[in-house]
Image (cartoon, rainbow, N blue to C red):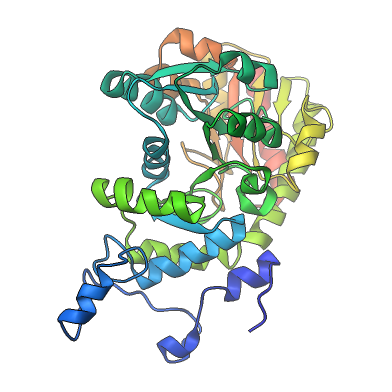
Length: 396
């Protein structure tokens, strides 16, 4: 079969050999814990390369392997490894790169649990030093590199404020100092941004978001070179035991078939809603890289080919009761912490961030009680706009 690099075609066909499963149009779920062998020599040979042989489902499983092959191909990586959650993928990728008494440069606005993992958990367990920067100026990275810097951890666009980092420039700087780079690319997905092509070492995703897309999966993935992924497979993945179940991998395969067309609709809806909010008198600011008014719009155009459906707004109100009324009066936007599914969601980050971090860290993120996160789903955009228009009246 012709090997297409076009996502819509590739995600339907790549990594599948229907002759291996009786011509079934959908690959089967290999829901088994172990794989048996006909003799001593067969299993002995398999143990010579456990990465590429099915021995025990904590390692390689055929259903999981197909989903991993599709994700690696989509991102332009050599290998991918699926995990039980986005945080399992993030923590495993980080642990692969850091060392005791090491130093990490990251952003003030990274995902809260990743922030806590680096700045609290690993600080206590490994005496890891973490420097937080805005990441919008390469000089910030340059001036904070130390002799023991082992990792630069990125998230572009970043959480809540959607700030971008120049991936090509950061990757070049890191390589010149022999520093590993990881990016959380969940927002853009490999459809709209390919960090590995800019020289980033490892790409992580919460597959619970757009890759899953149906709000019925919790999973994560790490994508990168064969060397790095073999190291993660043999160490962090094998020893922490964060393997994904075959059924979840099968659901990811299901979701990948519609990922390109879903993202087109998320982008169309997102852009329409963002432009509406941009002109609303009760909205002080819209954080959405697809808007021409976004401070880093040109950088976004340079390294992304499209935009998804999550954004944040800063409402012109700091009164808790009014913001509660705004949130509670929305009908098509459910209240929830995740995003990237078919449904539209609303969330005020202050609810959890003030529980996860100190007030000082929260303030440093550049957000407030009036920062509201919106995940624009697949409903009709005009219905979502009408819903928002009604709810925003609660802020008067």
